[in-house]
Length: 599
Image (cartoon, rainbow, N blue to C red; front, side, top):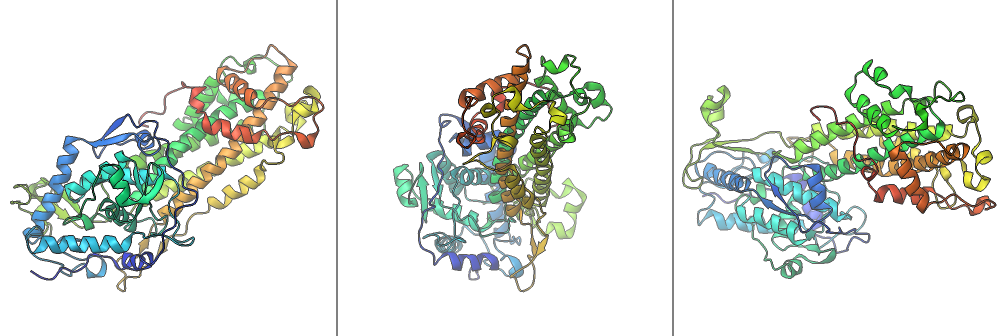
């Protein structure tokens, strides 16, 4: 047997040497989850995990288990890699080194032999010990502060690990961590968002008791967290160091992004319906004949949703004071919102695909045969064929190096999502401004309501609130595309593409957070002008969903009493933001047309 060469890429080696010297410091603003769904269990199969299930597990503490098929598949994949190495098949990251040393032999023969196995285990221990906290220091070494994000990363890794050659005990240990409420203290930076490497090493290290973790939201040593949970550290085995070329550090947060964006879009639709009521709008752009003239499925979908929300509204009654066309920001909002729904659906579909199946390198296909497709019978393909033997329980298959680790499909959709959101946001911002113009409203709110109830113009901002323009400027800078990058610390430039997917997901997440404020301000404006229209004519109705939201909001943010000085008016945007973030829009409007077929 040859001496075992460490399987660490140059990039990871640099990171490990940096992180090994840091000191422990807990994230000062750590946000633990509230495990309100801990009595529920979701089965992981590796191919049908949904965004809703990610939320239930990552954010609300639902437990997980592996399906028998997924557990067997994972064990078979590990066994095939052990057998492949025994048969002398060259395997990237296992019996061959990574990067520019990809042809360097790390070991020969059976990895589970008495000579090889102890050495491979020892290498794994050394790698994990130097890679993980004792801690972080400074801004660069900041940690993930949201437990739901860390748990989403762990969950996606567990689901994808059913296609990876991790040892079965390590697979089970990760499931146990999720179910026990043990969340390692992960670094927030360290990769470019492409085959994340360091964070997967941290996960494996934590399973072995290395570093620090949060147990039910309380920080302590990982060993102590394991003790309190009634668990023991799980030592690594041959193959566990090969499972680093995946993208769970961006896929997990992207799944939460999709969930949060849906809630935002549902509120944007209701706020739009309220604006239409408040403006005494012509709703003809939403009508079915108009939509069939341009059958973009998602635009038609959103127009149908808003039209349905307005069913029963006074807007369908004749009104000689109503103008034929609203300002474009109001009249065309369903186009921007429908386009945003389309971008959301595409991102949801790509995230769902990405977190199921596998982006692991190498790709290990148990049971694949040379006759399955023409290329598999060629001499080059047969070099990577595992005939089958003791370590694989007689099963055969192929082990191929690949580029599935490149998350570019997901990265593209994240950027498209952010741009579509910004194009919706500008309409939300501008339609609030249009309520200041009597050219469109045909009246002044202060002339109908008392001046105090009419509030501060343009969204109800006041001391302690925010300006829409300031929020919009934050959103504008988030939509600039991340420049494509190619760089390598490998002297031979073997690994030179950077996807920057983590930066793209961070920007999209920030854009959603900022957008909540614009929608909150829009709800304030819509509600105020619904007050105006109701005061003008008490017989007016607004549709079930807009009415329910308007009434619920007025309970927490009543109109100001006459005579209240302007400087003493409390900002209504602040309670509006808390209202929409804490209350699902679906609780006011659970129905509506189905999403376009196939989505």
